Image (cartoon, rainbow, N blue to C red; front, side, top):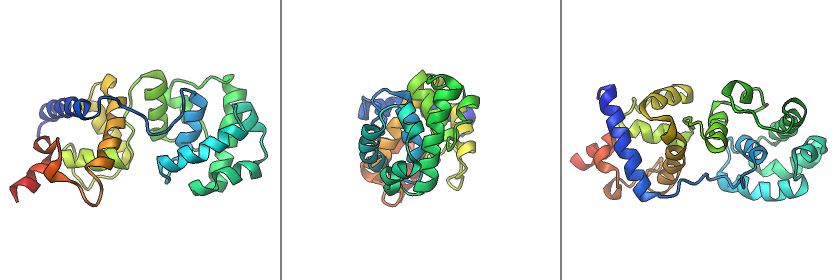
Length: 219
């Protein structure tokens, strides 16, 4: 496909996903508090969103503000985030990011990629999540669902697994205002239909717009 054809296909895919998932919901239950989404985004690395939601209910009850988290004993934070995996690093990142937010940014989360990447443990995926959900600036959250499914759509070779390359490719194929909601919907779609090991191509509502779905139908 040409770039123009890919853009046209992605526009159709976005519209179809809106029909299937009218509400584009973030899987992390951050309650509208930017600091909480910052922390939850970091904890979600190599951990399920469901686990992060469960862990953070107690974590934020114990330390309800960035100030409280910044001052908390690291051992106490570790107890709360242990089940998220990599808990030593994640606990330290959580404490340090909270301190940085308070001391360096006056408690207001910055709205640029450059500044967000200064926070410990924050990479481009989490930064794009923050920019999209908090500031509505768009940004491709190149998580495992996005990488897998957009490759199946035919937007790039399915062997491509580099999140930064996927982010840049998809960023050029979709308007900014569609990107954040698309990424939330593609997570839901990946869990419901287009899973990693057993995609339900036969009942997929996007089959006719998907290279993998077309190939499956032809067999």
